[in-house]
Amino acid sequence: MTVQTHQTPMPMHVLDAAVALAPEGDDQYTGHTHPAYGNMVGPFGGTIGATLLNAILCHPALLGDPVSLTVHYAAPIADGRFTIHARVMRTNRSSQHWFVELIQSDQVAAFATAVTAIRRDTWGATDAVFPQVPPPDTLAPAPAVPRAAWTACYDMRFIDGAPGAADAGNHASQSRLWIRDQPPRPLDFLSLSAICDAFFPRIFVRRPQWVPIGTVALTTYFHADAEQLRAQGTAPLLGVARALHFGKGFFDQSAEVWSPEGALLAASHQVVYFKE
Image 1 (tube, rainbow, N blue to C red):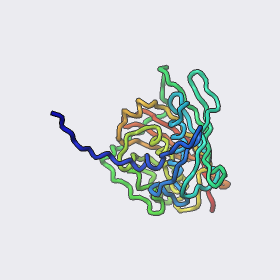
Image 2: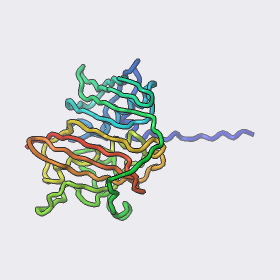
Image 3: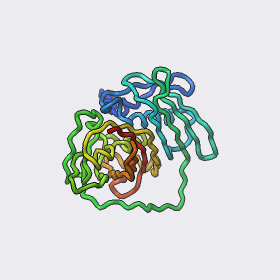
């Protein structure tokens, strides 16, 4: 006797909906911004970067896993539809170089370069130090920021450096926090690339007042392969972010993303425009 059961399909995670692409011929895709990842102006840059990366991961010519991704935010991105062109610039024996453009109104709004490669076992070491911090279940989740819808898509538990928490005697720009997708989602390159941009702009920590800002360029280095990311499941990740310099309308900020066991999964560096 055959028994048939009805299983309700699992709904798509909001991040997957935000970065979803439809193929439109050779090297071309279409996508649409998602209101859940809205920012103060336009969409959250982390999902834009993840969408550009997704065009590479969906491409039939893909070789290996992402090693680096550099996103240039060339212009404000409007809510709505966009087109993405992704093409291989060069394929070597074990590595590949990519160029990806996001087009709106017949103009480039963002573009990225990326390197993918076939990973191999080699000697390894980590000079960065995994911080000694309290576990995530001992910390309260930070409330979402109403003016930035995307913050509701992450469970953030700050150890220190929450925006607006600095006092007159504290001038550090560093933040340390546990972070994961909300609702929880198994980690992969798309979610990790978005998380690398989920650190509040350092100027909001260093000098806690709201000013107009915008990321100009963001580079993420992936230190883990796909198997290592799958092993993380939905566990919270430890993020550390800091700035080096503020001035003349720009500042930089760097970030590290660690597994709970102390493996450095990714590092990023970005330059951000600000206006007085």
